[in-house]
Image (tube, rainbow, N blue to C red; front, top):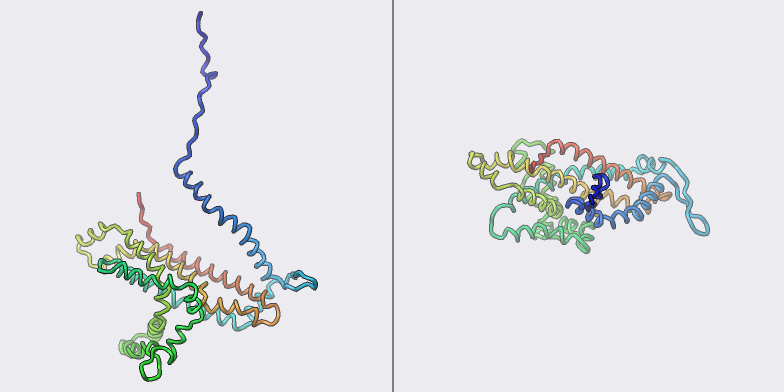
Length: 325
């Protein structure tokens, strides 16, 4: 008997089990970790966000017997905040000016300290911990003290460190060192003198808010290959040239990250005067205080978004990203 040969189409090939790649499996695990945040954002945060937007454009009235009634008023709450309540616009302008002053000072100080702490020296880990300590302490009781500016008040009054003359020695740093006279003799503009004097007098707040930025800069500095610095030394480059040609471009992504972080931190900190004004607005405005305060919050939020977009857009054109391939 002859065996019948089945055609190729009739032969059933065993199905190969598809195995997901490592990247796809990592992505699935990542979604599992992000899932609690997504659920909370969708079912808790989004309804609150919608109610906040609704409140900013409406007038809320309490109904007799329980409940509230919303009446659409358009941009009346925003107009009141901008044109009727003069304190909000003045506080907002002052807060923005303070931001322009603080952000560059914090970035420069944290970068300077990160470069120093990246050097090989005895007790380097202890010094890093000391400069990061304010970040750890800025919670709980210390945060409330900082928000109330109690330390700053004590340093600026006779209740601080007394030098025997009845005035605080801590608040007289600039006068003692006579920076103003020094800069005046160098024929430097008064605006620069005022900026330097304000930085010196505000050194406590700058140091207190530079810990996270310093660690980010440290991680960026340690990611630079020592072979690059060795090649610079062989070519005869000075330390100044090495910094501007190698170090600064390599850590430019960290500068962008720290700038964004510092702006957000400055705008949302408990001691921010705009945040304090908005929080106290409902009790200070006789009619529709909650609705107007909500409108102030949304204007403040939009200003923060615009500033962040502008800073990120400008700095992104100067950021250098090293290719790994």
